Image (cartoon, rainbow, N blue to C red):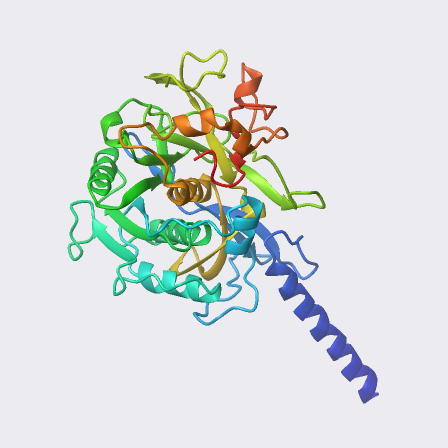
Length: 404
């Protein structure tokens, strides 16, 4: 009788291991052992005068709804769930492109105490060159430029910061990274952080993975000619958000990205959560020539992967909402730093020029996204993907660096 019992135990163990392996996949279906997946926003909804970060964590959860940590170790992972650098570079035809050491600035709120060490884990995992304070590749400062008087720690924004830093690394491995931490997520403090970043030598792009109500406030802080200032369009479907709606900003929408048996090897559709719309307050840039039925700034201009169900691998050791270590993230928080980094790879925005005009003049160097939607709207093109420009995905996603 012992042998059948051992066989049963062996079968149970095999089923358990199979379940865990499925849970580690960003797109795995819920298992029979009670593990499922849930998408969690890591920042609260923005309040008046403030922005919210737009990162969405794709969690594995148990039957009670508790987050299951897949791998919290800081050692090399066998195969982290979610897309890594090779995937991003393959999907957007960026392999072999280099920035020559240009700097991408990341603006976020609060302090991520483990930003540099977590970045090291991510880059080591994927064999990317070290990017540290010591070798001059990485720098973290407050909105005033202090490297010591930093804001208070915040777990949600820390995970947002790790997402941003990892996406710069994935897209542009030779880029330098400047992390500017605003004291709070007020638009006043975030604008001050953007203005500081724009003064720093070597900065060619500034990514802003946050948003709040559509407004015209602080427009000058996000308008730096010769620098690509990108901003996420939002994660709540149809509806315009600031700072993406500001005239000087490259508004970045979101897609669902999947591998495919086609010439590209990938396929994309509009992500249902991507923000879009027509601003009520901000002037229409002269380059938005093909946007119809919108007399003001329209979102988005371009896009990249943002669907957390087809999300990206991120490492962050600052536990928040029960999650830490290797995680899968999405949201237009992922797409903004990706596009900022493509601008850095191209490093072709002339001094005194508006970065947003580049894609509109080079639509042939973009992958047009023509399927999917982010909700219902009075003007169909504002919320449904279509040939040419549309609200959720803009003109499309990078096909190399030619449009940037």
